[in-house]
Image (cartoon, rainbow over all chains, first blue to last red; front, side):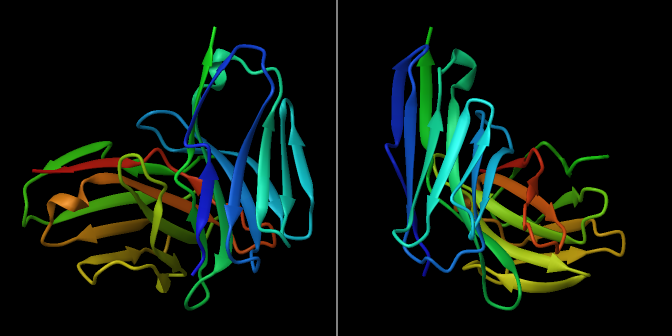
Length: 115
Length: 113
């Protein structure tokens, strides 16, 4: 059974700081790994997707890495801003029973960037 | 391009009632997945529909059921509601391309009293 863990559960940083969010998963047989952002009471916004054959993806101030063999991914946020405050969720995609491609999520890291 | 939409936004029901949630998939997507997100937790996979057939299911009882229509929109039905069914229900649509990205709707907040 795939399990995804995110550390830390909550993080508070001053504006301008660089930060790293961690994600680990127990089964390396994944199709891809995705990082999402979720604002309170809202749906999920996809930030970055890393295919299982890739090592990293970058978008603006965000960089995500994937080490499938060790079951780890990191999301690096450069020069954090108050608008980055949200919950960040890591999810791995795999084939479940039948032919479904199923996402398994961590519980998220709640990030607060203080002005 | 129209994104994933869900209705209603919020819903309040009492224990034992039945509820239907709706999802319209993104243009060009033939697969819809449903997830349940309890407060403070990550979303949990309920089931997935592909071409009107359920092709995968998570650890949810049979009182959670669904449909997918020829236009690829979908419904989630929950019978005999329990207090623990209170959650944000998220719908995600995707294609069967090699990337496997799932696009999420804004969710339906269900409260069971």
